[in-house]
Image (cartoon, rainbow over all chains, first blue to last red; front, side, top):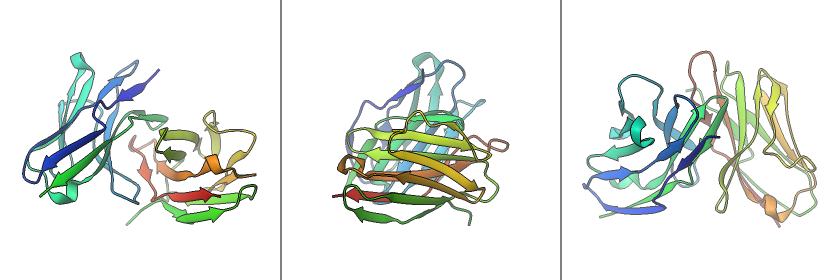
Length: 111
Length: 114
């Protein structure tokens, strides 16, 4: 069975500070991994995805994520957070056939 | 700018009424998903279709929910009769298995059953 755990429900970060969101997954094969962002009242927007190859993946809006097979992790990072990054972030595992989402991490950005 | 379109964006209805939510997937996408998002359960997959055929609807309460794709440009999710516990945001997503494995989400239908 596939599953995703996002250990942090809520993170508060100062504008300009770095951000790291944790994601651990369980998957029976080579995973397809995704990070989505959801702004209030909006749908989910894909930030980045990992299928194979380079384990450091670059995404939109200055985000990157690193796949670590040994740790079953796919953590999301951003070096310098902007106020517009305040949103909910979802990690997902699977393929187009069936995606499993984590519970999400809400990011609050303080001035 | 290709996008998944969902209607209505908001729906308030009385318990017992029928609710129909519609989704227009991105043109050319052959896979369509319905997800439900609630505070308690997060994002749950209700059903998904490939080439208009239902492949998995195990996440959907069968007694009151039904999902169909009358044609390649329209997917519907129907609840009859609706109950207050159905209040949630329902997302449609589409994807193309041939070119990528990601799902593109619509903006959702926020359903409130009173």
